[in-house]
Length: 213
Ligand code: G6P
Ligand code: MG
Image (cartoon, rainbow, N blue to C red):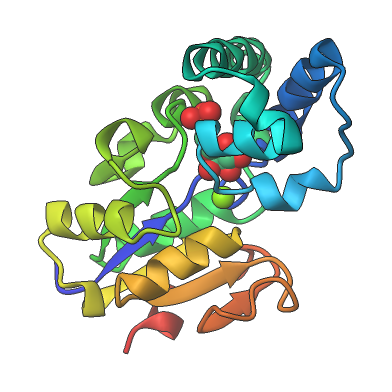
């Protein structure tokens, strides 16, 4: 491929944020921790263990690493249960059309997801086959905003980072794309994603060629 697009999953292709939030909320309640939905924005794109640290907040030091692993497993079990509800009806508006437009233009298409459940989500949405390559949290050492996950996707596609466009809804994700030396398209609000090269409200009317340099 001469150019490639690398898409984030959660919040770009489907909105799993509410499910992640519900699962964290359940854990916070069980532990008697304060929790409000304003946490949502800070948890976007952040790995499971880092999210747990944010949830525990000042109480993080009271738990051993082993206890934290168990808490993360508990949250994940709740999340996996909620995933069973997802169907292709949960694809965000314009998402499939955007992915197909990339393919139809002969461009490489990869997924770069901070979630260890990415393959299960793609499967539920029935869009696994659209991607040339998938990199998820199981394959990287450093989470977003580290550029590793985007660089790996580019490498797998054989496309130089400067010829890649990353598509993200999270601040940490936009930062990862920029540090990878790629063009960053933010999906969401400009006031949150001001570090992106371009910001669009959603994937409807997504024309891949608009973002190629
Ligand atoms: C995505 C979501 C985050 C989530 C992370 C890890 O990036 O935006 O909210 O914490 O993935 O997900 P996982 O399924 O591995 O717990
Ligand atoms: Mg996201």
